[in-house]
Image (cartoon, helix red, strand yellow):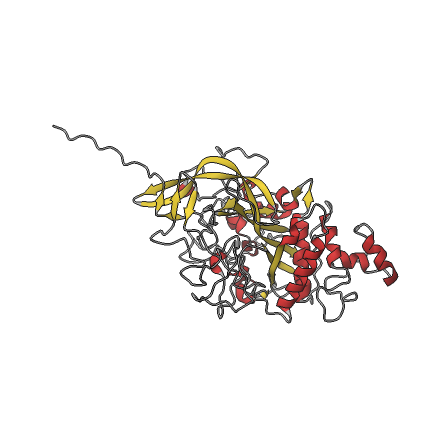
Length: 493
């Protein structure tokens, strides 16, 4: 049930104006679920009188993730949930966004010799042990996306990603880690998450010295690794040096993923900063070198042709096409980006219009949040989910559910997290569930050994520190100074 539904469910209309003017406090109405429409204007979205104003309640330090979701909830209500969860996850707790107080992948496996952590956000390059030696630490963040390519920002620095888990989510992952054998040997093979669990994946643009952040974006200090080159047999890859530097980063994207009632597959939502890239109505973008946008965006230079040669050019190529300057820590060429589906390819009745209306209402409400909240400057792209109560073992088909079963935004991708996996016109259907499913670790020929499908495999966190972890290295054609060849002994006389 939304905060505003809770607030207004038993208020007479004459009291509404007073309630809106009063401090927004969580009060005790019976939670009738997201399917409740008694206060919704017929055919309108957002649903629920004063819904957007109620978002401020999720800024309360004691607020919890909204979890009520009836089995007949419509598209509008799922997208309203997304904004509620976004505000809740970003609520400043003593000045720090709530999600930055949660546990991170680094906490799952701690190795001897790890670089001591500070209180700052650490955005590691998160390379696999094979590239770093036996004592490779498990780390918070990544420089490589799901397909192995890197988003290179306009200043040459990689866009980083970080993951953050609520307490019970973290505990469930730790009980089922592949690296410890728990995934394979847990006596309860359906040991799974609970209603209220959540995970956030954030993407961060590293600012160069003196560079201004994207207008209105949330910024913070973070530790990032000093990168170096590693060449073996003529092939080079970028690896961390073991040293860190403190920089300013700006939040440019966020997945908010939460377990609600009737949806054990989690509800998957993604947000982007307003100025990331040009955006196109769903299922309309085509590559066309004669077209471009006259405006500058964070990840798009004005006038860049909308051609396959210029946009979303993959960087994980063989032979390598990306250069790395070890002296500056920068990569080239930079990546030019568009958001191909501005509402995630939402196929529900009035889906794109619902998302646009919810964004307008939510951003308007966020303008009244304390301290000129940066949340007003982010767009919900869309939300994806399965049909209610299908990702359960009593459903004979639970293990085969994947992206083809997604409901809502069936082409949901974040331009800063799944930059290169977006679906152009006529290619709709790729979404979060393409990679996150019960068979995440069951593919022949890709992973060391197919593992038994389990519901918990929907979270890739259980692969941390194991060979099943997504590789996070980038081949480069120039990595600064390569190791000098060993000197040859002079010939014997």
